[in-house]
Amino acid sequence: MNMDNKEIQNLIKFVSKSGVNEVSIEQGDFKITIKTDSGPKEQHIVMQAPAQIHGAPVQMMPPVAVPTGAAAPAATTENAAEDNNYLEIKSPMIGTFYRKPAPDKDAFVNVGDTINIGDVICMVEAMKLFNEIEAEVSGKIVKVLVDDNSPIEYDQPLFLIDPS
Image (cartoon, rainbow, N blue to C red; front, top):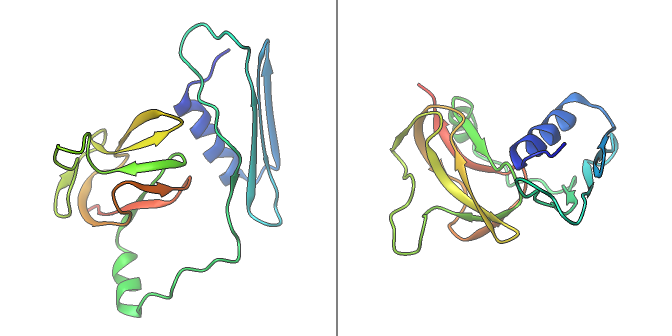
């Protein structure tokens, strides 16, 4: 059994949303354990794979620690009410955020662009691999929340989308 990056990311999302404290999957030489703590919000991901994997490469991700006490600056009431109508596109992994496919190319999307499900909206570099991030919702880009070439965390909001 080999899991690809998307399957591992979906498993991490499922575990974090389900409230389960630990999930372990082991089959042959492949083993993955995802642990969460109901106290401070922190995830530990431990993966072991054989030295030689046949097929698609498995990306190893370091443990993700999410600070619990850090609060964002309070938004004005007007902005908070306005943002409630928008959907967030969040990062599926930690890495470096890129708005363009190459330094001399145009950005994948800009504020005001209309996107559809499956459209490539940015790239995230993780462990020397460039991953195209596709939109999971359709709508209009209202705001880009991260600067180009910035480090990002798992589940960090990247874009605000107006779904209407």
